[in-house]
Image (cartoon, rainbow, N blue to C red; front, side):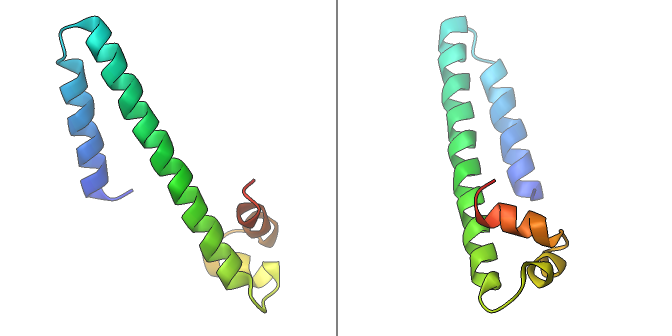
Length: 81
């Protein structure tokens, strides 16, 4: 994770803890967590696309070596597992 993203998450978490109305805080935290989950899904989709592009003409073993994972893990990433 980049330093900027880590810093932004920490700042937002700090801001959320300062919301005094507990119901408002609950809803704000839920919205924050949904945004994180949406970002995670987008990131996983980008990873899948990269792995599938790398796979073109290569065995999974080679793709895995390029990414620093096993060939079977590269294949799992490509299929969203």
